[in-house]
Length: 338
Image 1 (cartoon, rainbow, N blue to C red):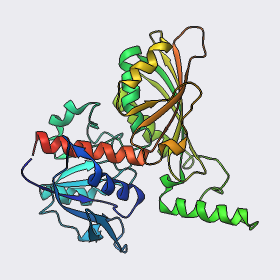
Image 2 (cartoon, rainbow, N blue to C red):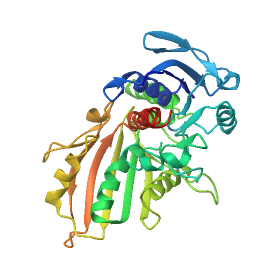
Image 3 (cartoon, rainbow, N blue to C red):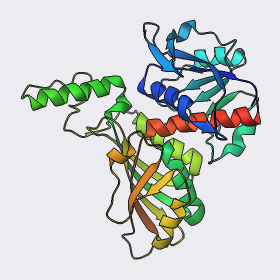
Image 4 (cartoon, rainbow, N blue to C red):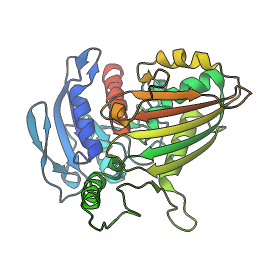
């Protein structure tokens, strides 16, 4: 890797964008930092201002509608950002390669979503279009685990409960939970403002978007899983906003075609560097997950007499994992294609 690369980060002023910038600084590829010469931090809003630190340099935010890509090699759309088709079109026309983890990108058929270690053989199919969709929802970090189990035991049904932090709502969610917690502790009335209910000391299930409309977040997660694991799976997803700042919690119940040897599971999962399997009653919590790039797995059990079911408790930092996925893909593209 003798040459260097210029990378534009969309929505760099969001929590997901900030996490991605930090990951570009920290993540090694073949034991070395990625050869990034210049970083262009773009904002979703033309009104946004401020800066971000990258390798000790202060970089001012650039409004997306003012961005030009003649010098950029990659444009990365971080997990959960709103899809900006006009921006991506301009970038591709300038010769830029898109890494897209925006809402719905991996589940709406734009192209086959690609993840390192999952299905990177699909990279070659997307080269000509210079566009790569990356699973970016809170369930993306589960895909290596689920694929491993699917390959070994053949999954038939999955019931997934996802408890997401207020960080999934953006900085406004983090600020609102902090404010509401202080108000409650001081005996003051709390307004839930632009949220469907109070965030502090509360659990909020995702509700229908409207009559005849689907629950978009749950549908996107389900579709990402189906695209990655196969349409034959029966998948149900329930999303809940939990009163925590960062870190995602998952309760997963699986049915399998082949009987599962519960004693085999721990050794099977421990082979994967992205997974940390807890011992016995030492269950992982969100304290373990925040800022970690691993899946923390515990409470592995079976509850039927047929040995064709499996349950997990998992905690993870989906922002961190999504950033890792995007940077891993950039590293693969630099090594294989550029």
